[in-house]
Image 1 (cartoon, rainbow, N blue to C red):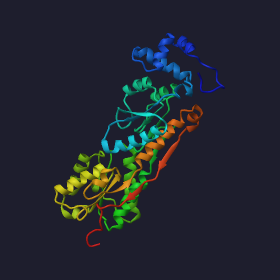
Image 2: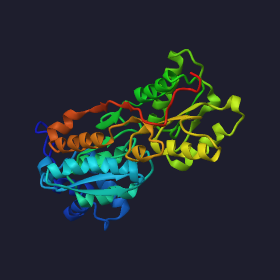
Image 3: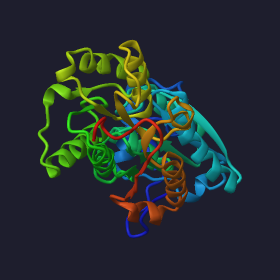
Image 4: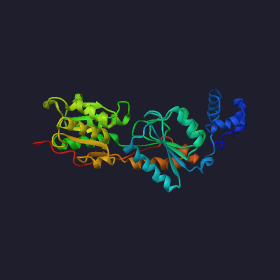
Length: 345
């Protein structure tokens, strides 16, 4: 019951003696059972960690569940992730369980006991990071995990798959500049998410490379949702014509739909009066009216790569060699009907 044959073996019986508890209590903690006192659970977890205890990777080889954990199940975006994980699960004769927990930064503390009981083959996390204590608990049970990371910058040693957010912001903004737009606004995501900042940095870089100033009055942080996009767009657009932008780069497709709504409320036509570029390329982008020009983020492929990475990490040696494994997938611009040359350009 050790991960390194060069180190002395540590048995559950020895851990039980050190913790001053029964072998059955150690087993209950390892399996996420709820019928253990909080103080006892904490002491056992500390002893497991201090002894470097790891279940053998083979203990979990027969598990048939892949778990996906979101902080919120927003249909269009989340479904793309779920589809990708399901494809890999089917290839491996597995099923998918979906859990909603915590904030956009990490799952809530109640999640860990549930996943320890379920003992999935692996966990795909759609968060910025995972608390160190939760990482250690998963590792000690030989439950591999990796993060789908459009949202942040995980801690060292946390395997993750992301996409080229900065390049996406550059491509979206360059497209608008090439159409003759010089007064361009940006509505990105939450200010505490790395992807929001990266897309905004790409926006600013493209303007700078074109010799155009960045008007900070045209920059807003949003929430990646329709309502937030509408509210921020109204702030930007409901101004005198000489201060109004002729184009908006929205940090998500849902925010772009909010921009569409705000434009309609103000009597503006897209793209005649206002060009709009979104981000993600979820299916709704193709169904919108007009069809949305957007940056394609390969959400399904990101999910597939993360699920495959998790399954590779079931092998203990692979897990230890993974280290700071980081996979970044390319983004590209998809031009549709929501952008047009600046009138008179």
